[in-house]
Length: 355
Image (cartoon, rainbow, N blue to C red; front, top):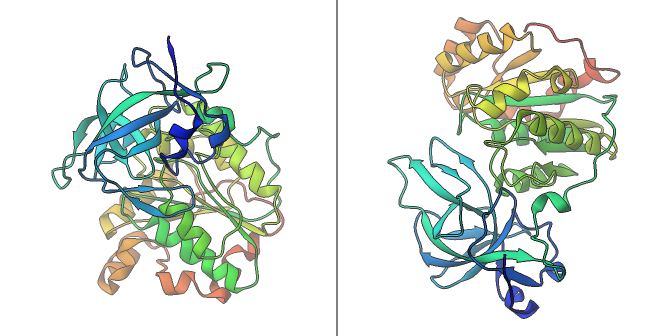
């Protein structure tokens, strides 16, 4: 591996993505040549070649920066699972590839939804190294590992049928209800692809602190070992429990059939921390199938929510076929409801039980 000395000023002129935000610019010194093999989390300086689906780059402060051909960006290599957008993987070399997520993920597209435009094309210029020539990787700037937590405050998870099932809306409205009731609420998104939208939405709803898997050193969780995802999710919960949060809300990305989600919700180390789970769905059939999946694993489903709650008819159908409470966003954001939801869990987590 050859190190190309370029000087820190080159990095100062680049746009640093949300996913790469934890890596300080002051440690960026040089670049490798383009003959190296990247791995997930490696920081890469890349040039925008052709604007496609992603026309903006999410920066670390939450701002979306418009992209122009020729811009140089600091992004991380990572895999992506997004049935509504792109399936993409870390390539074997630094050949031209794509920006597959607005939060700053470089990867090679394997498949894409027909509703997507072509992915924005990028040209990797080299992996970024420190002064000693060590490639900078997001994992090296992760939150420290802490002992497994004892859950002494309410922890509610939100999972769903798929992308766009309404998981984030469910999270932020429950957060809003708890915050309106005078509580400090911590939020963690424990799986997904590096992007800041869901994190900033939780911040806007009043949550603090708000963490995601990038804080645990992962640019995305897709295609990562199940034990790594499990450990990092538990570590995020542990950090929230060390904060001033009175209650914790956890978002689990994608759907129950996605490997990361299925593995995490099958891990008793993780699920034993949960007091309950709200399941988000787009329709009654999805709600019924998901509820059955969760009940088979004896997970404590408290109720249903998600995109289907935009329709009173869908709510009635779901209630009829599942027998579970269905909560719309106005209900979740009501402080009296939110407080009543977590009141039974203010001492210790429940043992897992079917909903």
